[in-house]
Length: 337
Ligand code: TRP
Ligand code: SF4
Image 1 (cartoon, protein in one colour):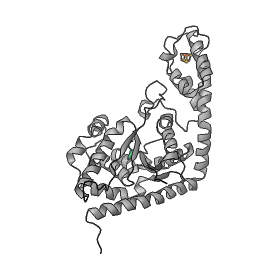
Image 2: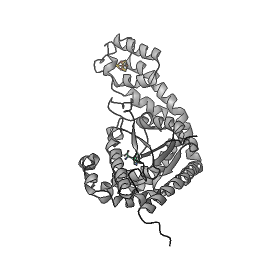
Image 3: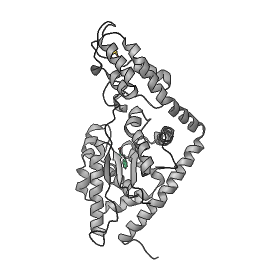
Image 4: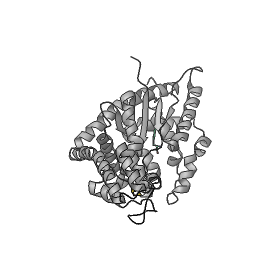
């Protein structure tokens, strides 16, 4: 049997997960875990690079993230699911890589300046923040991952990692073909089809999310108060689904017959907006119900979450230590004493 290709991805534990994460990232991971040897890492050190002054929430967010991943179906027996800071090998590798990483490669990664300009309330002129992409490279290299599923915004980070891997192999490889660190490839995740409540991308900072943990009544309220086609001021005004954020959600959640009903009803003013929203509310709640049931079970049995994380960390450690052994060897650090 040929060895399965390896996949690694990470997510920053900076708050609850919403349907955008589910449709945009996690569903993709669920497919990947059927085909690849997957490593899914809760990157708490990465959260610290920008949230170093909000440490009181980290533990909570890490645990919630583990619960959410398990609840949507990340299977700890198929995938390695673990917390970054439990694997100090990542930090050691980061340090060793830092020796050969030109400073200019880090300062020119677009997110370095972008984030500093965006998060003006934070001082991000730190060593840790500058090193963010290198730490990400270490996450990937620790497992010699072949593929990294990420969104568009992360592509420069994977490109950067490839360059670091090539430079490392060039400096420490015995000959041109000696690959110590696999240069990873991007598995580009298509932008989520799932817009937020206002039609923009679903994102915490836009306050337009439906959270995985929102109870049915909250989902109902959020969808009921969604803006619709502005042309439909009165019930008798005809509308156009293409101008309505509710329609965008319908397309993700409902079948052809319902979509037909929405289009005809909207354009002829045959249905009202609240009526139109009803099957959407139902569909979202039906999707969330089993996830929330699992979340509740895991919250009541935190030992299950701990066991999954420990299993993931123990298995990840085996691979990460092998990598560190070969990296230290080529860097002259495999002392006999
Ligand atoms: N930088 C990624 C983000 O902000 C998170 C991340 C950290 C990551 N390490 C990783 C993603 C390794 C993929 C692989 O979303
Ligand atoms: Fe939007 Fe439906 Fe109202 Fe049309 S009927 S404007 S699609 S909510």
